[in-house]
Length: 265
Image (cartoon, rainbow, N blue to C red):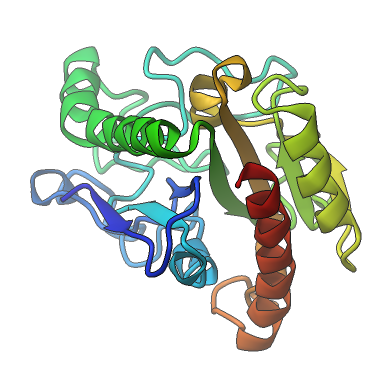
């Protein structure tokens, strides 16, 4: 299975959480192609984000999470490799050949993955994830009349190839107000901003391919992306889960979802 799905554990609500970058495994047929030094700890992973959100099914929220590492194929990139940003930052591709820091991922130091191989990975690993999202959203919308997709991410405090400064604690993305209704955006932003965390809105991330594709507020299908720095739920090395920090973040997220549920239901 290329993804994991956690159904609601109580009365369902019209929210689906997506975690496309938490996967750490590699398909058997590809493992030997990668530089073995990268495999034990694929550092571009959104580590433990699925664990951070594991409270959600008990709130009636369904979750879909990635099984495979984003180095196999990035589920939050455009399937035709269209650039998400044009400000000069380094953004890895649909099937990356380097890490965020420019390190070559493959044993043969290839500069890119072939078009045929990209097509194969799209069919096997990318499309099933996106198709399941679409199926779940359609099902929820048929039951509730409206639905919210919450796309969940994390990043190191500092990634110099994207920007020189430290990232803020939380970054809410709605593709400049186009992927969700103003009411849902305002509720999410207000509840995040009342926390002790520094919150940005649409900068430096406004939403990836998932938010841009599935966010169709005119059809009552809304999408928001939340990026957070790993230090807010991991230890100072940004390698280990930190229960106390994670608990503080979970309380903020739970409160935010409670208010969103009130609005949607």
